Image (cartoon, rainbow, N blue to C red):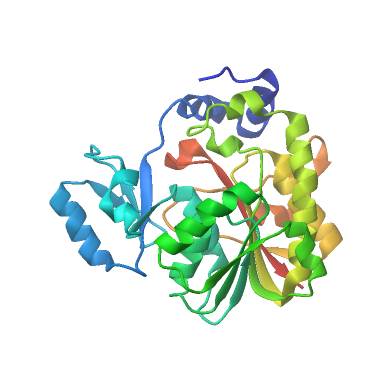
Length: 308
């Protein structure tokens, strides 16, 4: 594992205090394998019985009934199982399942997944909608469209269409959505456990560059929302520039309000309301931070914004 940069340690010590050592320690551990049972293709109870027959030890994801965490010795890499190839399961990190749960998609809605590849959250949203309503699954980066298309097909998704464009351009199309998920491109510092190289590539400048892009995507998303529509903004970054500072900006510049989030059975922390000597809007505390040491999961940031 690469060494932790001094600047990275300094900033996260300032946020976490004495808990920083637990944070730094867990970054060296492997994440448990978690996945969703795809109820569009298979009955949940039937799959649980199948897993039991395999001798797999699994635990329920507390906030999402179709999510499970693999705890036993793996007889096979899950990506090589017949269940994976048939689309009966979708391998997805536990914290990654939270943004669609917060979005709470309904069967009669039109939803935009603005940065959709590889399709983890798109397929989860479609599953929650029982393949009803409509999803626009958008991706900007051409090589990533292949994984998005493959996962949508493998999981039997029939209510989604794929678009290839810059999310910032949606504001120019005159389209309006009931709900939007913006799982924004980010520096990925919450996902160090599965991608240690992030410790090498991260820098303050990288977070600031990401923040600039994220703000443009946020503006586009808000302008595409119907009145009283819901926008879930999330990242797998733990950097305030990419998270709370962006939400503070959206409150001031885009006229949104931040709704409180409660995830049952999962440890979350409130969004921070001051950073680098600047006080942020108090609504930012309604966002949630998910730390690896709190749940043995990826780190994530999730916010729920309403257009007013």
